[in-house]
Length: 76
Image 1 (cartoon, rainbow, N blue to C red):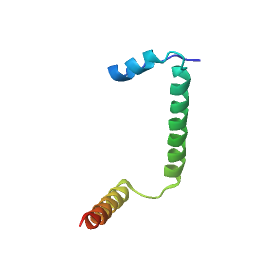
Image 2 (cartoon, rainbow, N blue to C red):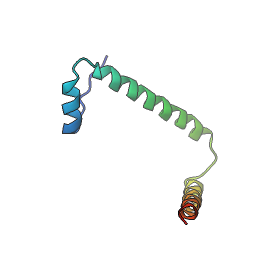
Image 3 (cartoon, helix red, strand yellow):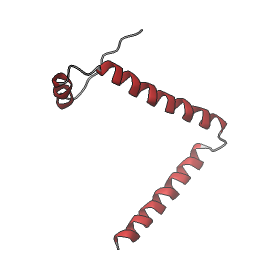
Image 4 (cartoon, rainbow, N blue to C red):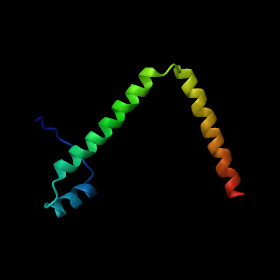
């Protein structure tokens, strides 16, 4: 198995050090596997997509505009 080194914020390091009973490498490994599986799924979906980057940008713009409008109406 390969080893890696991670940089973490001081506050997180303090908490990790306070809980040496926790297998932090196992938690990091599981979190990385979860994220990697989601990336693989996204890669499979994207591979089948016929959308261009411009199509995606246009959809992104329309969705953000609709979400903004929705929440602006809720605030009123």
